[in-house]
Length: 229
Image 1: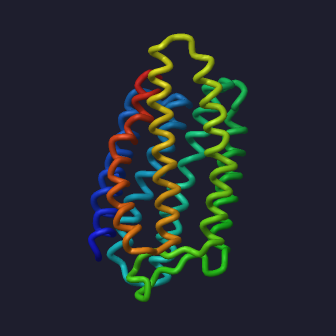
Image 2: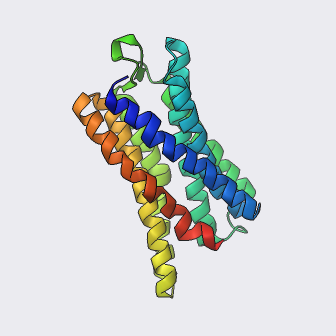
C-alpha cells in the first residue's frame, strides 16, 4: 500500500470514521426524537462506510473487494439524504415532512444510487490497479448528477432560506458553521470521487493531504445545529 492510500484510508478516513461514530452516540444519548434520529443517520452512514472501507483495504479477492467498495461508496453518498431531510424538517417542520415523506426520499435516493452498480465497468479494482478503486467517466458523472440534483442542490437552496429567516446574529453564526461543515463534506465527496476516476498518483497523494482538513470541519455540522437541538 503506497503512502497516499495509507494516509487516505487509515489516517484521514479512520479518524473521520471514529469521529462520526462517536458523534452518533452523542446525539442518541441526548434524545431519540425524530430530528435527532435523522441527524444520527447521517453520522452512522458515514461511520459504517469508513469501517467497511478500512476492512476491505486488506482483502485481495476481486468480487469481495468490488462489492465492499461499492457498499462503502453507497453509504458515503446515502448519508447525504439524511442531511437533506434534516434541513427540510427545519424549514417546513416535521408535520409537513412526515415519516412517509422521509421514507419516500430515502427509498428514492437509495434506488437512484443502486443504479451505480449496473454501470458497465463502472468500478475496476484488482491487482492491475494495485487494489485501488478506478472508476469510469460514466460512473463518476452518474454519481455527480444524482447527488448534486437530489441532495447538494436542494441542501444549498433550503439552507440559504433558513439563514435569511434567522433573526439574531448568534443564530446566523451557528448556521454559517453548519454551512461550512456541509460544504466541506461535499467538497470531500466531489474530490474523492474525482480522484478515483482520474487515478493519477500525484493527484491521489495531494488529495489525501487536502482531505485531512475534513476532520475538523466535519464537527461544524454538529456544532452549528446538533448541540442546540
